Length: 267
Ligand SMILES: [Zn+2]
Image 1: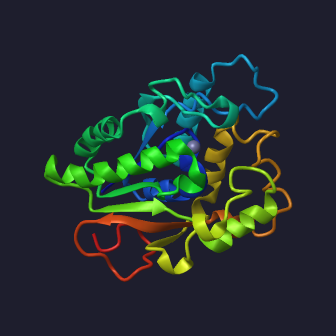
Image 2: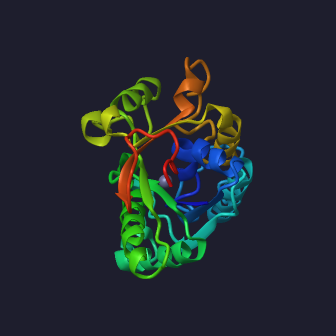
């Protein structure tokens, strides 16, 4: 069995799906991660990291460390550039994900589907979690590649899941983190009803690996990040991080009565 997760930046894999990736790796599934960029336009949130650091090289290593923590294969980098946000937006960079042709991005993903033959693929939901342009671009390209793989490989993937957030969870994040990418989003638009989940996974046994993976992204979860302090004093942290939720982005063949507690249920 094989699982392929497709994301835009180092750390995209850790928060919403780190437990899932660790769980399937522990179960003997070949778990692979495509990362479209090296996250080179991120913000350094740890003051102990020198401001002149090559952020792309640092975040590449952080992702390698996170993958080791999760017990999954070495990450696959597609070599595009992080588009950045706010004052860091790379409007003029032709390799920034926001400027890359969508077919080119889809075409960069598809050979990996042919080579790895995953039954299950994972990516963002159509909002890209919180609307980051790179998340939206990779979500569209991964979805397109899921479908177009059917014409170029004999064993196309059977299921595509979107990492989606419930209304309750988004409200909970907004209560505990007054700043950050989710702070000003309307949960009614960006989150989904619990009823729409195709899969709900209890990943609490793999919470240690998930936390270690999150901490591997040191440049992103430092004292100046919106994530800082969210763990301390937050009641129910384990319950919160130990549950990962997915809606269905695509399916080939039958699907059991949702929500399933195993992404491969019935395969
Ligand atoms: Zn991201």
